[in-house]
Image 1 (spheres, protein in one colour):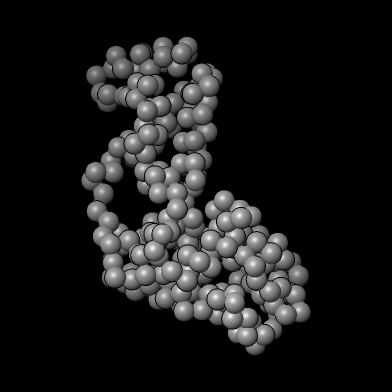
Image 2 (tube, rainbow, N blue to C red; image 1 turned 60 degrees about the horizontal axis):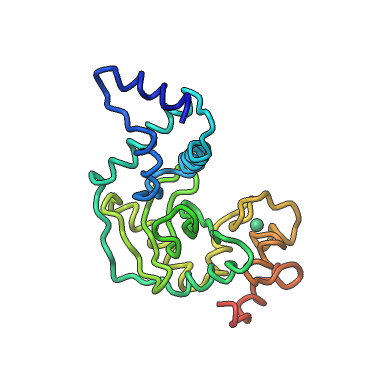
Amino acid sequence: MSNMTSNMTSNMNSPTPKYPTKDELLAATNLEDLTLLNDWEREAWMSIHTRAQLSYVLSAKQIALWWKLYAKLQGKEDKPQAATSDNFYPNTVAFLSRANVHIQRPQLTIGNVRIRRNSPSYSRFPNDYTVSNPSTSTYYCAIRGDNGQLILSRGMNATMRDEVLSILNRIEADPLKAILSEAADNCIFCNRELDNPASRAAHYGPTCAAHYGLPWGEKGSNKEDWSNEEELI
Ligand SMILES: [Zn+2]
């Protein structure tokens, strides 16, 4: 406790707003729902939080950002409640979870829909998957890791829901077919640029092919061959 405490104390003397103390900020991860933050905000939160736990001195900018993110997390009661649904995506969960022996957070992006396993270290629901927009990080819905049930967000309008469900349904029916259904300049799993013909044909590279147990190369470049790989689906 050092600079940080004195900074906060001086700020707390001003009439408004009431800033949280360092202890409150540190405790906030325990009541976290960090899925309310976008990727960049989560990274920032965790980085600043870790520095504070290690009693490193934080810059005024870091403290300001910490407060801002804390306020966003505290606002979660006002967020629309989630609702369970009758939609289940067990094949999608099974398809993605095969990569879990290689990577912590399997993910797949098709069109405007990204499905990503929640963080094992900072999500309250580490076994679930978050469905969001890969460009804007807009949260769409969640898929439960244990039974594939879709948890809808009430914040999602009907048009958005139809678009998202249409892509999720295609993935559920046939992941490999869904992967080929949209143009992809980058790997649909890890987002790296696809720099050779076999990867461009498959929409993913050799490393991700190995992680997710998928064909790649001669076989992977031929869609007909894939449909015979029944054990993959
Ligand atoms: Zn990849």
